[in-house]
Image (spheres, rainbow, N blue to C red):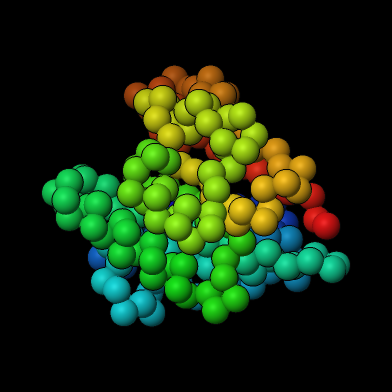
Length: 197
């Protein structure tokens, strides 16, 4: 994951995008794509007062008469931090992302490195978000090859009745047997479709 990869994928898809490297751990970056002239970066963790371990970014996607503000996160895991440190850092970074958008974020998506019923999910619920998978009867669908749900999409409560569809790619679609790897990624693609009203 780096800016060159984002640029290559964006060119292949004929889209534009924004990349944010991890702050303390640059290799844990992330990106967001949008159709040309239909989006813009707003803020990211590189300018944050919170010492972010990985990354977050806020972007705005626009349509002919609609606008969505989307947060993309890669929150810390217990790989580099103790369980307690990782839990506290996840909450600090999530609160920082939520506070970054003056008008609020409509959708927050990414690798939360925690199950939806943990402290991060509780924080999101306090801020008026709901787990998109739960509103679509997909709460049991794993989002990684280890069968967990660390990757999630949360939407504002007011959007939960907008013909929401949430789905996750089956892990067999990512299966491969080259270069000693069995899967293209340990994270499964997930997406939502929301009707504009």
